[in-house]
Length: 283
Image (cartoon, rainbow, N blue to C red; front, side):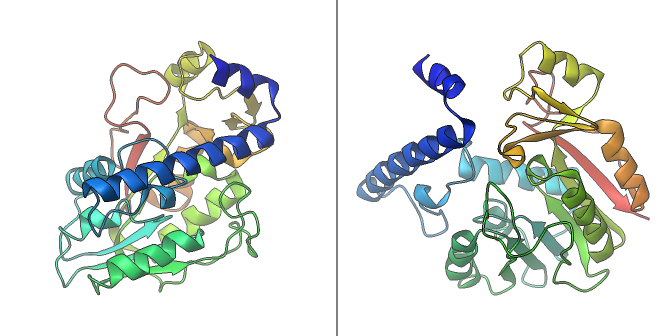
């Protein structure tokens, strides 16, 4: 109750800073406990470095999405994979047990410390796994970034990848930035290659649940084609009109593989995962 009251009366930016301090100190304490109990292996980053991930189970979420990559996306162990917004390796780590040595993983992110950890801990052990830092501005994740997401080019050759995925990336990007990433994903993806992306999709069903205050986030600020929960930090969490998203897939020659797998984020009773998942094939 106190948490709810403070969140309502404080400016959102101040609340975000206080929340980060709390999470950081709690993570330091739990890291010490993990070390004492021997509960962290060399491919599990310390909690204090999983700062932007949230409260979901790090290892279980990685295993969950590996299943989706294989079962929904048709990922094969010898293929070339791109992880857009790879973070601190939550998806990369389970892939180290699946991708053959002839397969290739490339990942990039905008958070320097997370990329550094992946390079020092994952690439050191799996030389077919590579990580790059892109210094892209994001008000929430990289406020001092030099480049805008709406204008960058992914540092990979055209039609290089068999499989491209983005997990919880477009839930933190505004429309011009997201469209550029769509364009770049289509460019680097081979013909007949597949992509898997996650969203908070606004349709008749999810809007009804959001408006009934059943959603995990209160998307109360409405704009043309999207809603946000925090007007001061729009990138904190964003939901998009499903029709708008489908139009982007069509524009960039990415054919959606039906059905869309809807998530529980809005309070839905029947779901596959937390976020909505779309798999598509490049024509």
